[in-house]
Image (cartoon, rainbow, N blue to C red; front, top):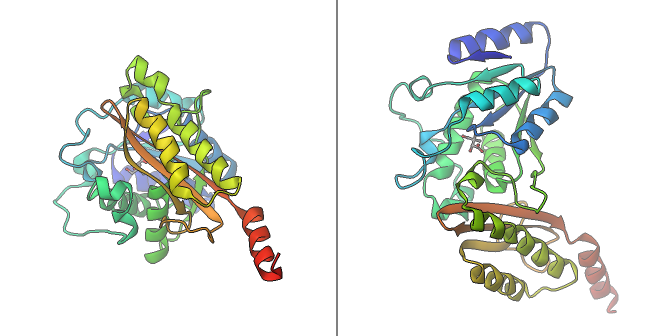
Length: 295
Ligand code: PAF
């Protein structure tokens, strides 16, 4: 595995591959890699000749009171994991390499960036958008792989890429979970032992809410309230817990079929996010047919 720290070296390596007609996939990360990241690399390998991974803890996407300083930086184990799974190139830029001068340009996906996580973390998605835009311009990959765990991030980046005509195909990769259902996340390492035992309740609440919707309930608020109570009793401080349309992340109505349930909550000092998406297809279709036939 080649390791480069400068944009110049990155471009040099990638240009050589391109001249040989090779297809390049890119996995941007902030490091502290877990099985979810490795799954992104493995999915990338199935679809490209070369896989580039970046590790950059991006200051622009952290708020002033957030965990930028304490975000786990685990360069050596990360390098070993990436080399083990056959990554071709690791890009490890410094903050100065990425942001040599104060930014005068903003990349902001309006609307989407202010919902859900964007409401609790003002400016977060602008920071994500600018760094991903810059990284895409540096790597110029054919394929960009992102985890579906950050469902809103994926939607923001898809919108940015479409709006700016960035020539890359985006592939979302399903969330990798621990055996007890907890979504893998670099921030899980902040959890204390008792918190870690309660953490899988978040996914259980998502599944129970999805099952209520799939069994025909359109009283979304009651389904959410039931699970909110269970989570609060277990010590979660909920930020949001909503049933939305997966296309635009706006509140779902009973006529929507493509749904995503989004949740964010604090457990102690750790902010956890998760989601589950599904189609209410058959049930919704049966209902609308019944309405047409008057059944
Ligand atoms: O999901 C992440 O790890 C980050 O938000 C990303 C996409 C690498 C941008 O810094």
